[in-house]
Image (cartoon, rainbow, N blue to C red; front, top):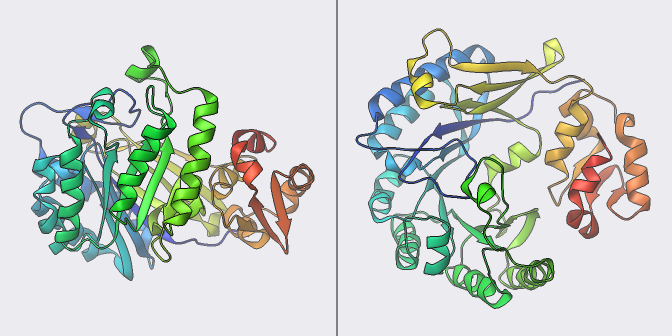
Amino acid sequence: MLELPPLSLYVHVPWCVRKCPYCDFNSHEHDGDLPEAEYIEALCADFDANLPALAGRELESIFIGGGTPSLFSAGAFEQLLQYINRHVNFSPSIEITLEANPGTAEAARFRDYRSLGINRLSLGIQSFADTQLKRLGRIHDSAQARRAIDLARAAGFDNFNLDLMHGLPEQSVTEAMADLDTALAFAPPHLSWYQLTIEPNTVFYSRPPPLPAEPVLESLQVEGLARLADAGLVRYEVSAYSLAGRQSTHNLNYWRFGDYIGIGAGAHGKLTRPEADEILRTRAHRQPRHYLAATASRQAERKAVTGDERPLEFLLNALRLVEGFSEAQFAARTGLPFSRIAKQVECLTKTGLLSHTDGRVTTTDKGYSLLNSVLEEFL
């Protein structure tokens, strides 16, 4: 039987200064003044539309992503957070994360963001090499990246994430390790270290850059994992590493198949309704102008996740986690008995891709390297 999982809120701010050639997120270059006040008003109305589903529940985390949310003023987010908190309770230990770019204009606002209750930053560093930053279309340089990390700490953010890519165009193992070593020198409590992938509907997809060969990618992965472990950053998800107790509450809720409200242009949401044996997926209008102009509803899509779809949707998330999942958790989050996937789990365990011990399923190191193949077994 379905049980109510923890609840999070995702807020999407769709504008950025310049669209990066690898980015497939719902982000739009802006010219002129941003419609900040109008957009905050729309977010509040969007949140109102979700209130019937929130009765008696409290928010465990809020993540403000984009785009570049740090283009908005602290006052705008203060208005939004106060409005939300008037209508729903915040957990006493709520994690409120803001994505930010290291550009000078955004970094200057860090102290103001911290003062209004945002207690975690996620900084889009991507690389400390100026040549790579230019190739990636980033608007900051290495000096600004370093400065932004120092400013975040000075502003009182003792909990922050650094986003760092590897497998960049023509990147050698030595260059990738230099990037990683620079990041680790700042002793971040959390690091997202992930490989550049070429996604459809991006500039890199139509004009692919020269990427490192597979042996280079394998070598830098092995060396990188060793350095992360030496630095005390424990891998808890495929591309997420943290000090003890500094895992991302928000992202853990995604990966554990928790619930989340999504507000903002293109934002996705997931809600569990045990009384109706229903899991709903929602998506708002993607185009900012359509989202702002909507009056009756800002949702472009609302659909139920069928019983046949639930196992794979759950596993797409849970098998990314080092902790894996328990048989009881599968049943509580999908409303289905573990027997629905038991045969596939048994086969994958025999081939060494999964481990199934004491009622808990985890992905092995071998399975991590072949995760897509693992998931295909559940199609």
